Amino acid sequence: MTANFTMKDLVVIIPAHNEEDTLPSLLRSIRTSITQNIIVVDNASIDQTRIKAQKEGATVIVEKRLGYGNACLAGINYLRSLPKIPRVVCFFDGDGQSIVDDIQQVARVVFEGRVEYCQGTRMIQKSSRNRLGTLARIANRFYSYILSVTYRQHITDLGPLRIVTWKTLQRLDMKTPSYGWTMEMSSKILKAGITHAEIPVRYFQRTKGKSKISGNTGSAIKAALVMTFTYIRVLFFWRPFHRQ
Image (cartoon, rainbow, N blue to C red; front, side, top):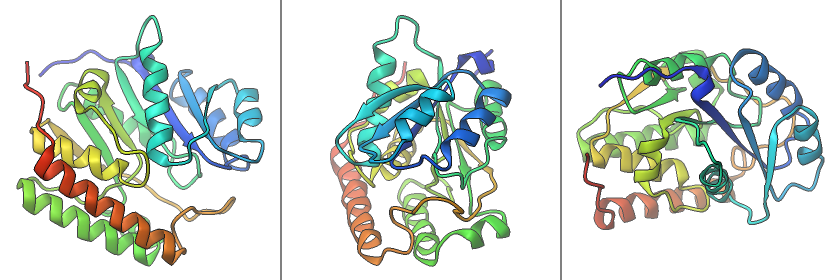
């Protein structure tokens, strides 16, 4: 596999629900060191997420249906409407817990043509792993193990930093509107036998805003149920695309 991608080929999609405190500095950092192609999906925010993202030069679209997957799907649908679609897509959280510089490390593996999909893993470096909440750490270990055993391909995390070629993303035909988004993508990548890799990334505890899942037992249980159902749906009912 060969590729000749550059940062000009990359677009960063950031789902954002009430992230007015973390977005400005994050967007400035991405524009300075990564790419000017940034799409912020304002996912039913009730703060100034949209206004602050626009001030920082990001393209902002609004998705009123709450849900991480809904926001990601809105970003994908927006890309489809462009006359020239970026060749590589990065999904990145807007909560300030992931590090912008790590985008380059993860993107490099795709840009060099080694894989079609690469994700950042927070579970390799002890410092990053320990910053995950207890429930998140357990869930990531459990579901990563299940996927690894099911598809006989090793992964360690279902984290938010994901970079994939547009061609491959289209073939995945993503559907999940909520918490199960990362499970759906990882499951389909493995089931379809898409070339993939993981790169250790840094992760920090949230200093601003409020986590939607971490520390909330009810939300964590709901997320676990959705991820389980998503795993089952892909395993038994999704048929991989035919590779060309």
